[in-house]
Length: 267
Image (cartoon, rainbow, N blue to C red; front, side):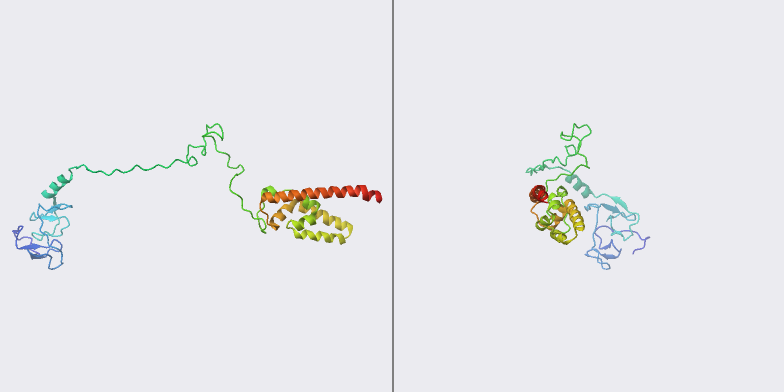
């Protein structure tokens, strides 16, 4: 490093220059610093630099803004003054000149998708406080606690032990009540065949067992039959049970007529 008290007589074009990175003195025609390997660059006010230039506070030489040492005198750049090179200002004025594009490329307008009324906040799905009714546009939406309706088919889980029983078949079954053992054998409830064994029980016990089993299956017969046998659909199940109910009622009425017109007179 040169002594700060020495007179500065270096100018651009001297036979030596200082490294702006480490301050080491190098030959003027050198390509890189002999100490740190940094490239040696001579800077003047006509040098175009995007970041601008600074002036050395001691010798007034132009340096890059990132220079640590002045390349002219080797002084550390502590109190550098920012300057603007003439070439950079000229380049800036040239770049600001606007030139129209003689062959513009037209960009097609974006295609807008059709609006879905179901997602439109102003559509009939959202409702309005001043609407005339649920059927008019902007009317109030149906109550959330009402019965849910859906066009999607319900999964047929019949024949499974833990199948969910449809609500429409949870009703009284006349066939299971009137002809319990026969209905059970053909409807997927085979344990009802055990009621044939009630014929060997004493009359009071037999009546109690048959009546209790008939009432129980009258209430729960549809649920047991839905889980005990595979059905094509709910409508198929209901159709078969209606046929069973027709035959059960017919046979029961016939048995009552035979009892009153033939058995009682002969006894």
